[in-house]
Image (cartoon, rainbow, N blue to C red):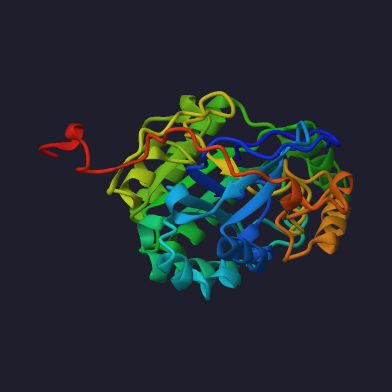
Length: 347
C-alpha cells in the first residue's frame, strides 16, 4: 500500500484543482465491495468531491470520459460492481483492478470476505475483463509465530493454484509498521497469543525468491511494491499506478504520465484517490487506512450514497458544495489522441 496517515480536517472550503487523469478507487477503502452504489451514482453524475485528509480542502473531480485516462480499482471482493461493468465499459471508463486475497486467519482479518467467495469473485472479474486487467495482491506479508515463513509458502501456493490462468501478475510487499499498524497489530496479537516478527532482509529475500518460483509455476510474474532491494531472481519491480498498464489500456493516447512516488522505491505515477480514510469495515489489523474498526463502522453508518462525497466530515455538514463550486480548472492537457499532430507521423 502506498498511502500515509490522515491528518485533521479543516473548515476551509476550496473547489478546483488540476485536470484529473487517473483516479484511484481507492487505496483508502474498498469502494467496489462496500460503496459500489455511490461510485456508480457519481459516474452517472459525471463528478465527485473528495476531501484532502491533510488540509481539509474539498476538490471537485470530473468523472467525464474526456477528462479521464483510467480508473485503478482496489478491492477484496468486486462482486457488487460486476453488474455495472458493462455500463462502465460503455461509458469508455478504462480500468484495471488490484485484488487482495491473502487468506489470513481471522485474528488478522476479522471481517474480510471469505477466501472461497473472494476467489470466485476474482475469477468472475477476470472472465469479464481478462487476466491482464486483474492483479492479485498477496499483500502485506505479516510474519509471526502463527504465520511463519512456512505458512506463507503453503498459503501462497494454495492461492496461486486457484488463480492460475486468471491473472498474469501478483504484487506483494512486507508490512510497513506505521504507528496505527503497530498498535492495532499488537492488540490483535495479544488477544490471539501471537508474536509479531519483523523479518530480516535476508529472510525477506529468500521468501521473495521462493514465492517468485511458485508464481512462475502458475503462470504469474511476481512484483514487489516499494522495496527495490528484493528485485531480481524472478522478482520484478511493481508500480500500483502503472504507466505501462495505463498505456496499454489507452493505446489511442500519448499519456506522458508524471511520476508521483509516495514513499521510497515507489514507482507509481500520478493519480487522484477519491476514497476516504476510516471507511473500510473489513477491520484488518494491519491496515494503515483505519484508526479503528469502530471508527470505520461509524463512518459507514453516516455514508450517503447520494452525496458527492464518500464520507462527509462534520466540518462540511450542511454545506451545499455545488452552490460554491466553480468549473474545474483545466490547464492544457498532455493527453493527445494518437495521429492528430505531427509528432505521431509514422507511428
